Length: 351
Image 1: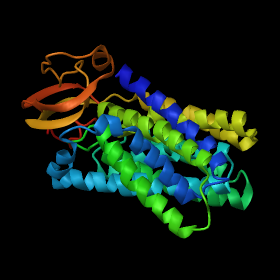
Image 2 (image 1 turned 90 degrees about the vertical axis):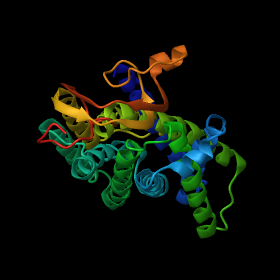
Image 3 (image 1 turned 90 degrees about the horizontal axis):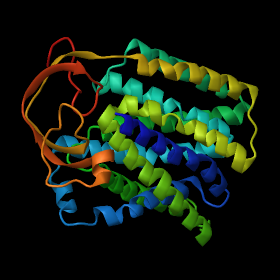
Image 4 (image 1 turned 30 degrees about the horizontal axis):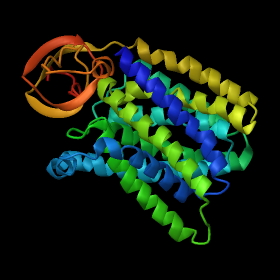
């Protein structure tokens, strides 16, 4: 669990740094083009990892449920989310946008509770309420432009909230494979739209290179790390640690863009700081059962569910985990757990 937390914070730093840097790039690239380049960068960075025999076949043999998860992830998280974010970034200060991105946690919690069996407890509900109130406060910091920017960022967070829940449930693709699919398809789609909508806007090579590099790190590596964390902790808990990304974005906005922190931003930060510690206080345990299953996801061998043998594991795989197809025998037990990929059961029974 500690490794999952560490991966989530690293993912948060990489993602948070993209906001102020993207603000700079928007001076020479329109939002559709930039969204496309960022996600293409993410996809291209993963080519050496996924360019191996058998990957195309994996897509073909995905069942209907997992295909829908992948399509939903591409549509919401790869096409809609980044475009909404960049339009919001055009209208508002980078520091405010960075803090607004905490709404992604609220969206992830709410969608998880309502539709994905990732139940909110009293602690998580209070956390979501505090962050939502802080985001409303931020919408008044900057007038009409700030409100418009806030609405765009809220739309992005709704899209990513759906995406987070879908990607945490994808069974059959490794995190880097699902990120590659999302990056290449959504990146190409948004880039083509941007070129058609703004045909007279020429892309400078330095700007294109910078956008691809940011995409490789902030949307490629970062997303792989987040998916691994979401499969290990559950989407909502992973989002808790990932939610530190806005703070990284805020500090970089001050350092890189020279933005200042307003009184409302300080109040919002304080409200968020009070809200987040509520989530780790929840403990959830009851008798439950697991059916026999064969699937593929990121895991480590330090829990009660992954006791299979390996011929050999590298030191990296032992410490940080790994992903491969493996099987589980039927199991019934009682332990503290989070709604990870193995614990999306209903409640009110031991099922």
